[in-house]
Amino acid sequence: MKAGRRAERGSSLNASQGEARGGKVLLKLKDAVGTRINRRKLDMFVAEENVDFRIHVENQTRARDDVSRKQLRLYQLYSRTSGKHIQVLGRRISAKGEDGDKYAQLLVETDTFGSQVRIKGKETDFYLCMNRKGKLVGKPDGTSKECVFIEKVLENNYTALMSAKYSGWYVGFTKKGRPRKGPKTRENQQDVHFMKRYPKGQVEIQKPFKYTTVTKRTKRIRPTNPS
Image 1 (cartoon, rainbow, N blue to C red):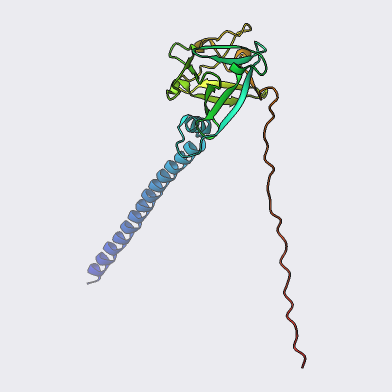
Image 2: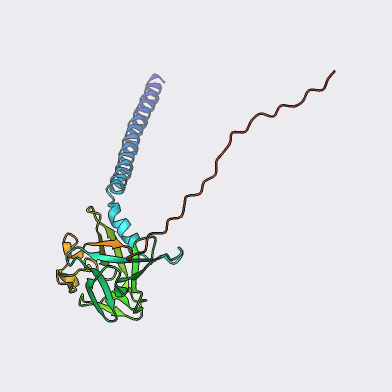
């Protein structure tokens, strides 16, 4: 009998030890799985932290905006190299316009929220466009993406116009006011730097900012009834 009880106790001890070992193994497995999951979460977090938001902004800038209301502005584009203004002479483009020249007055329509623009000559109704060879031309129909440019405000306060269809190609002119081909232009070149100017005798119309004053509410005093 005693031998049987000892055998039962031994088997129960072995079983409990086995369960304990099994529990430790399960805990180790759970810890390993947990660390793997945490590592995956950490890798995902690091990947999210290393996202280049400039690419996101650039993609959003290139996207069309059909919801916002289009804004139309009238101004001239002064070329830093030629010292004159961009002219849309029908199908021919140059940067030889004097201040106030009728061919230098440009109607600029924002295609998105202040980023993509279409530029049309007020006198000729032709659009400034860049064809697949990088040549600046004027077109009567400006619906093509070749007639859309991305406005970039540079650190020196000049403006550069990059083609929305041909990335890296800019509107540029030589010192003689002749157009440069898109593949030969770079953002840091003075040939692609322009300054916005209002036509001679025209000033920017600024609407006064309207605001309402807020008065502090006073506590109402109720009249007391005479007793």
